Length: 355
Image (spheres, rainbow, N blue to C red):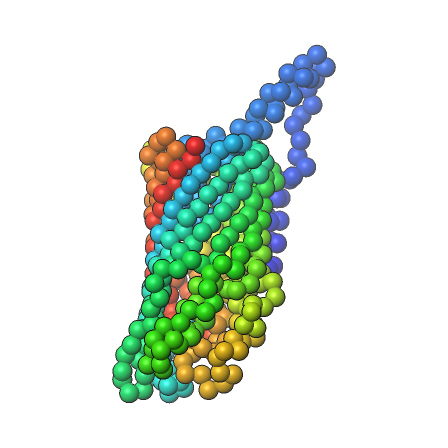
């Protein structure tokens, strides 16, 4: 969490929340000046919305606010592929995993659909709602050389609700607080037929939800110049207690820093660094064995890790409130508790419409 506080201090140091406009010099123009100032305040942070880089890269959510009465609907499609295992930051073979476990995961694919709604009841607050739908598959091999795949079809994940609260802004800089909560709407009882038998409970990574209410606080800063924009976002996920099966996923910390170049009125490109860290499962699912795990994903003490991704994106402003974006990247560093599947690449594409 120290990195979050350092980021916030850095952002606030150049733009203190208590900064005020200069008082008018003539009392006869006080009322008019205040009216003009009020109009300017309401337009701050929104004058850049029409730029192709007026929003962050499409892989960043909760990055911008809206004017009073404005709505935005969005859709994102995200893909992630994992292949091979890591022990810390070192690659390990399937044979090394099988020396410790009867079954080794070899690859995993995740596809996610994120439907979003934003509405601004005031210029200072924007409400958010995110509905994720996802499908997952994980490939395995056992000591006999037999391969098999566990797959789940599209299912609802944990719904997120929240608010973006403006803290400070001027013509070219904006800072807001991300206040969110994740609701336990995703299933934690996903089962399928496996070599171990029918109706088999799948491991922690294959479940659709956390089963817990999760706080999601954060802070987002954005800045603009004539042809460039930049931003940073720090987010956390804090699990509130354990779920009905006596466990909770680990807490999560995320930090994104990006820069973008506006090439014309319709197209911009971006470069982003995204770092994440997450903890082990707390407790364990009492429906699973307490020891002698068949495969690493069933072990709650081997779920922690951290990763740093480098991502490249394109944003397009089609006009009349329509936007499209795409962003893809690869990890440039990752360290995982043994033995976990390593991420190979991620890709997010999306569409946004505001009115």
